[in-house]
Length: 153
Image 1 (cartoon, rainbow, N blue to C red):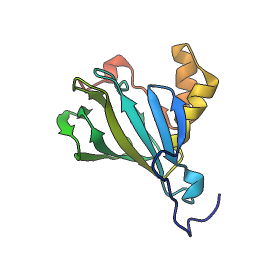
Image 2 (image 1 turned 30 degrees about the horizontal axis):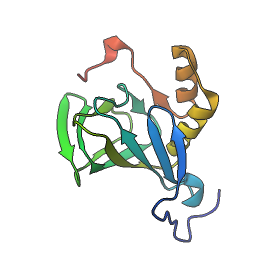
Image 3 (image 1 turned 180 degrees about the vertical axis):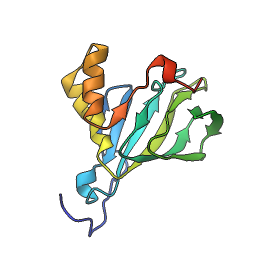
Image 4 (image 1 turned 90 degrees about the vertical axis):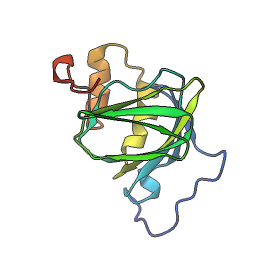
């Protein structure tokens, strides 16, 4: 991987689209930042969002670009609107949902980078069964806890 010694730039309208767990645009790849971070935008329909999950490898930072989102982690919950931010450490089970009435948009930064590649790989692999989905997720250090381990509503 190339050393992060020069600016990584993502002009407006650029990025790699990926449709997996919703619509995403990958704005910066770990390869462009020496592995320091990855960044993507998530476009989330009302009522949508990922199931409870946790990352073993990276911390996540979310900034609401449009809409209203609920974030659940551990025994906590917060709603954020445009301009609101939340940072979640690795190893903490969490989920989020668009709790508004229109499509919402999030900027997500993962540190270190690498997880942003999950969405294009998932789209390419097209896993269908829970076992196939878990297998692709495991390659990225992503775990979906079983129902009995879920502490988040």
